[in-house]
Length: 281
Ligand code: AMP
Image (cartoon, rainbow, N blue to C red; front, side, top):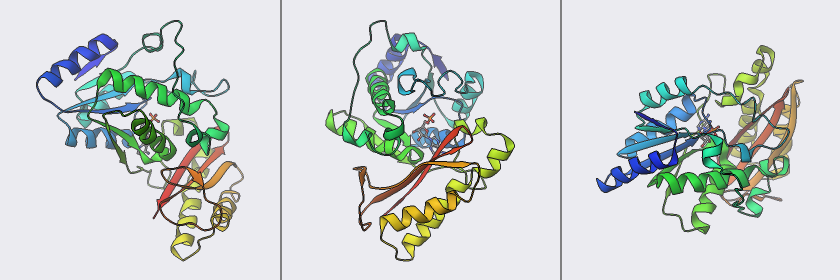
């Protein structure tokens, strides 16, 4: 497995693969990999001749008071996980390789990026779309793999691909969880032991909401309230949002739930912001 730090080296390798008629899968990540990322890499390896995992903590998707500088990093460990999972190349550029002096071109997908996480992270999805478009231009993947863990992100990338006629197939993979239900996340390392014990409340609360819907409750407000009530039983938890939106449109559901619907939450456990969701319909 190759580790590439330069855009030009990455392009050369991809060009060689394409000349041989090989298909390429891309798994964009910010590193500090866990079994969630690994599931994406394995799926990409099963469906493509070559797999590139990008590992890049993208500065332009972090707000001023967010965790860019302390975001966990461990490229040696990540590389061995990538190799084990079947990747052929890791693309790990430095920030100044991706963003030259004077960089000023951003992609804004509009209203879809303003709901849910977009409310508390106003520049986040602009940064995500910009870096994903750059990665697509560099790696030219046939397929790109994203997790349902970041369901709004997946919906936004879907729209980006469609709106800009990108020739990439989006594959969205299921959420991988710890045994107590907590969705795996690189940010889980921020949790102290007490917070770690509290964190599965997100999943418990969403499960309560999901069974309420299964038992016939259609009213979005009632579902949101049931979820919030469970989260609020946990003293270390502070809700950022609990929301019900049409999927993949990410339009708020007012009144009854019908059709494909995303139920999502973001919760601070101490200082760590965690997200989780489920999709019905
Ligand atoms: P990140 O490194 O957090 O930017 O995540 C990179 C990709 O892995 C994104 O598409 C995420 O949705 C996906 N991912 C992160 N955590 C999980 C998880 N627990 N299960 C499945 N996919 C995940």
